[in-house]
Length: 535
Ligand code: HEM
Image 1 (cartoon, rainbow, N blue to C red):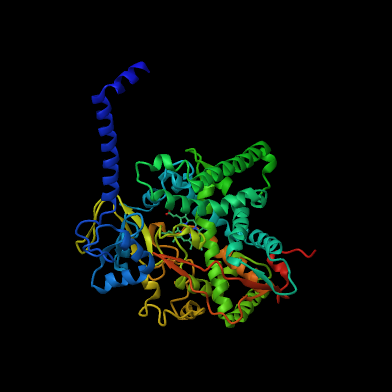
Image 2: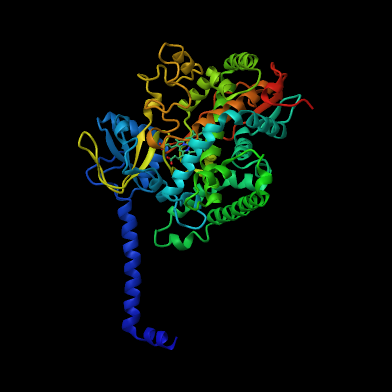
């Protein structure tokens, strides 16, 4: 101690230390500044030549991303950059989709890691390794998707229980903030399939499952406001980052307890329905996997995305109620034919499939891997108006000679989803658009909800196209089947039109403030075919 005190007594040493600290801070600021500079030789859209800071350009993009992207293409460009809140981002024309969709040097994971402070305590769900990701995707593809047949009735029963609890059986119209309530409902049904009936009824887990992602978005947004040199310190004090650390602790405790209970039961547990906790272990015998972290990752991917699509569908059906009876008739006909709900019954619901795909086309869910409520957004993470958010790990030379520089963030514009040449009357809702196309010879299967294509990027495209879409499609169809059979619904506000989604940067978020009225109705089918037992 005396030595240190002596050193600081020496003016030269003190001055040296101060200069060193100043240099470190300065170099951090200049790194941050460089990070915000546009990429060389790539045209910038939405930023004036004489604007020194990015502030105005960022605001411009926040308020009119769609227009700026179209402006870029109208200027004849196929690649340009715009200013997102955290960095310049390269926008690519969809004509490049085929060459970039599975490009090994365009990383999906690194893009998310960079945007979400991977490695910081609490940001665990963004910190997994490539090996972890492979386990999760294998588990979804090889186990979850393969089990959709036997899962149809359990999913339906859980949906029924959940709706009784959440919406009840009101004889008169009852008002719900549906968009706010739905993530909790979806979290319960999904968690039932992911981790069984004990955890799915655990309020503490449901809270983590719904709110981790919301806190993550806000924490990341708040942290980005700080210079990078201070971020490793500041995150400890940010309320939302603290909340994330708490979510992680809660999740670890709940899931580890469940794993211990199962381990103790051993063979006695053999009759239990297998779920993602078992499957992750089966797939992953060789390497250790942080299972609680992986489960939070699943929730992150599954809950708000699914809720957002269901909300959009209900808004569309409430705005265009003429679709409701044909959908009910379709369910009735299929259930009469099948006797009991099967995976194939859901595949046969072509009108419902079409209604879902059309809602997703017009209001694609946010792939920030989730679509938390509006107040969470700033611009943040990408897609919708744009899709396929990636980070280039090398310089990538495109077929026409243009280059995406190493380290750049990029997205592909998703404007094809509302382009007249692809979808006639693209800006009008046509619930049976895809149903009608599927009636044409040779088009029967290409236009299903789960088919990712260049013209419909709702589930992404290429190597990272959403592996959970088959599960999501079944889950959503089951939820809708129960809602349509058991409830009448309409907007609380008499005669209102379809609520417009909010556009913030490239995010499209459904209006969570809209209220819906629900009233119980007599279903036209015997509910035992949905797995319900009469009480
Ligand atoms: C309507 C519901 C859903 C929508 C709209 C949706 C959408 C998406 C999108 C757009 C992507 C990114 C694709 C890309 O960038 O190319 C994605 C990836 C992913 N989704 Fe979904 N998703 C949904 C439900 C689910 C569910 C239920 C699960 C889990 C069971 C899931 C698991 C994943 C995973 C693990 C990835 C990452 C894929 C990778 O790393 O390659 N998603 N999803």
